[in-house]
Amino acid sequence: MRTITVTGRGAVMVAPDTASVSLSVSHRAPSVAEALAGCDSAARLAGEVVREHTDASRIASRHLYVGPEHDREGTPVGFRAEHSLLVGCPDLDVAGALVADLAERVGDRLQVEGISLQVADSTEARSAAREAAFVDARERATHLAGLSGFELSDVQTITEGNRDEGFAEAADARMLSAKVAFEPGETTIGAALTVTFQLV
Image 1: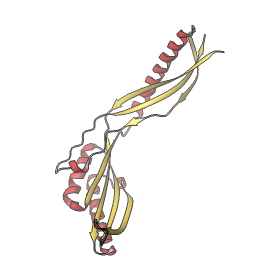
Image 2 (image 1 turned 90 degrees about the vertical axis):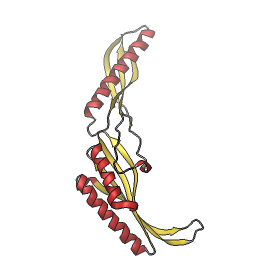
Image 3 (image 1 turned 30 degrees about the horizontal axis):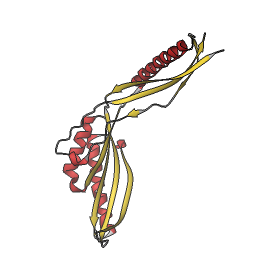
Image 4 (image 1 turned 90 degrees about the horizontal axis):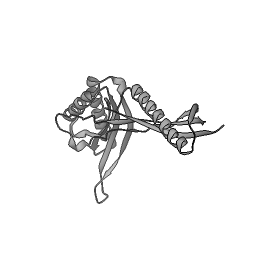
């Protein structure tokens, strides 16, 4: 039995509707204990702000650092403590309000490291991408079969490949202002199908 195997690709553009905000709070002090206490105070305040904007389960600690600080000449100048957090937001408006509120209330101890925009439910888009991938596979196979003097018959196998998703770039913390508005842009939901057709 003669067969032909091709890989089809499909993609759908959708607008992200949720966001994850990566941030950290830090505190510098003459001693380790003071640096850690100041950082913990800032982290607790940040947690309070977050819980006013989204569910408490959406905030997670990622990293805690406490260590010595040095000036440019390498001379010890005290200690720094830093606590990194990741916050999930149900929509972009909440993310913008959260960042603005954190900047106002946590102040100079806050650093916004970036924002990742995501699609909450990509089920429909993935289905559409698979359909487009199958159409692409059939078109490729039809063309190649015709070049060889054959026609396509039944599908023998279908294997789903890796899907690539490109998200909007992270926000630059230097662009933050009293009111923060995030633009969703578009992201690609992709699908790849490897399909084997019988030839007649």
